[in-house]
Image (cartoon, rainbow, N blue to C red; front, side, top):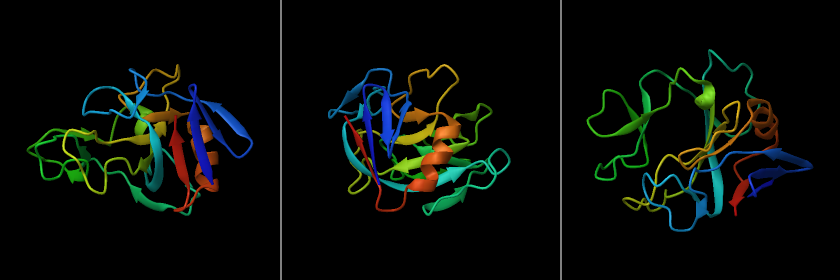
Length: 163
């Protein structure tokens, strides 16, 4: 299945749903911390979720339960840049276990993975949108309900095109 992001809408199958993108729009010139969502076509790698908040994740993607010690390295000087880490961690990293619900479900987008290029951007996810669809730091976000629908339809061959 193919997912398309265009004009702050996410299209999949016969669905067209509202989505949030990076505060500074979409560009091929993504850099760490610039609040831009990367333009291109990417694979969907795996799903991370909060077991205490989300029951019955129905997907064929590989699933991981988010724990309090999980994070994603956004420190471009670290050898763990754009990778899952465990806290305590010496470098800069984004916590995955949050009080707010935006990371209750995270689909990892394979942006800047093979090879990882320092300063090109990290932690690009498809995750739960805020209630008012506030712009993201570079991720794509949709409602939890729509994310649950999408999870049932995607697999490890699914791609997302961000335009």
